Length: 153
Image (cartoon, rainbow, N blue to C red; front, side):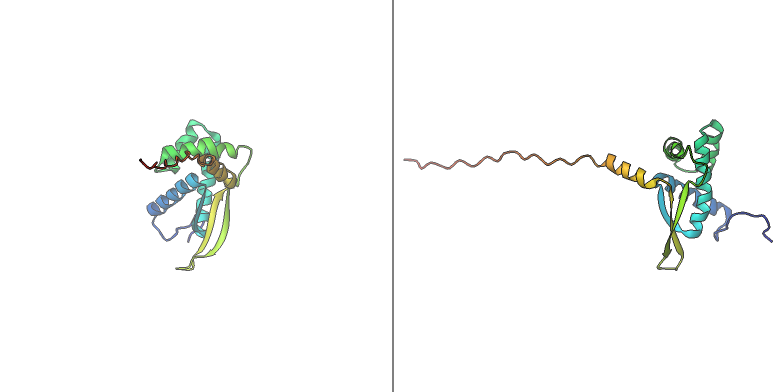
């Protein structure tokens, strides 16, 4: 019997499940929006919300706990959580992620979904504006016309 046992097994052993969820969290923090199966998104939502709550505290203990959640690319993911995502949700008490159901995958008919941080649209647009500098019209150099040859006498 599975009384009081939280979480889904996702048809994996514990180490594989932990690594998969860690990789999903890394991808979610880096891009702020990922597409995955619905069940994985629901499991990831628990971890992602916990990570944001720890990032909002921004203490030494919370950073240590974040490093236990994030196994690879720690520097990139933790700094983004502490400097961008945590302050964005400073006034919010919970519910930092959103799951949008997409439909069924073509190959195996698994239900798919998008999981994203709230406000991801604005941050993605800001990054796109910073990355693409203003396009100015290219200045063309004036073309020199070839001189006509004078007939020699």
